[in-house]
Image (cartoon, rainbow, N blue to C red; front, side, top):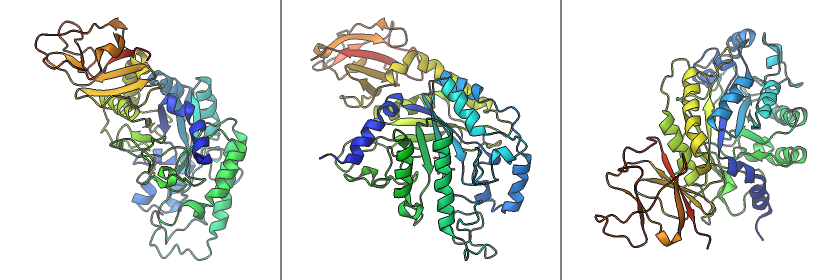
Length: 436
Ligand code: GLC
């Protein structure tokens, strides 16, 4: 009998695997130093020194309705915001700590404003919650491998009560799932070494999560990270294995399958430059073409892509990021039928690009020009019609004298001579197969 956990995971992720494309938002105190969200770890900044950012945090240009409109324009169907990152700063009005946005000069509940704004745009909402917490006194300091005070004998771990931290962590997750309405995704981050699974009391946690919001889609990082998948790929995944695997800053070569080769839900999380949190000096942005092709690659392998923005200390998404998302949106406006509801095609990857498929509609993503014609390894007798997706103009198969092998293939040219392609990033041709 198919594992109950797999059955429930399959049911829960139906909308998620249809929507394919999300926005990740990494935002917090680290936007002020503007050197990325791991700055406390990298520069070994003591808590007292980091407090200056807490006392200064006042993002007066924070307008989540603008963020939501940009996500919608880009074609993003869901969003995940850091409610608390590794530095322990809470962007929500938690009753369990004073280290929260409502106690900063900004004075408001950022998470609540974010949820209201994105729901108003019809975008499904998620919360990222760091299970790592460098602010909490009961989280390991000196002995931990990631803590800013790691290896520092002035921060001994004797007397720290980890159970207190677990109560705090679980209590905050309960607050987020009880006080903020319907949440679609919970994105935990991340497990490492012995800090994994039952160390977090993950069974108790996931039972609590599912008792409050049983529909919520949860990632795999209660037992894994960006460099491991956990038991989600096994044929008997544990109760906290999550609903999707979360490869990071890469796209798995052949997607992600379980030990029996069956595709499982997965999502590549990708930054627009090289940082999750705002980094003023980082101008190493990917191009819209790279983003479009990365999204299509994920979908062609049955995966999702969540693309990150890191707002600055004033609450604004960097203009470079916004411009890339607007350009991606221009492509999505004409071609999103080849993304939403699509997955791996029944046909092998072609030389010139990729296929995605949604039932009897196959989408040829032509990424490389051919000086002669485009050849589909799809027999013409299987094809009902071919259209250029961007304008639904008819494409008629041809039998050019110079194409020798034709068996099982269909040949066409786009426009007068097949190049230049109408869309340099990705020209999509929709092939409607005859119903068998
Ligand atoms: C890694 C980073 C963390 C980031 C996450 C996003 O876990 O440590 O800063 O939030 O990736 O997937």
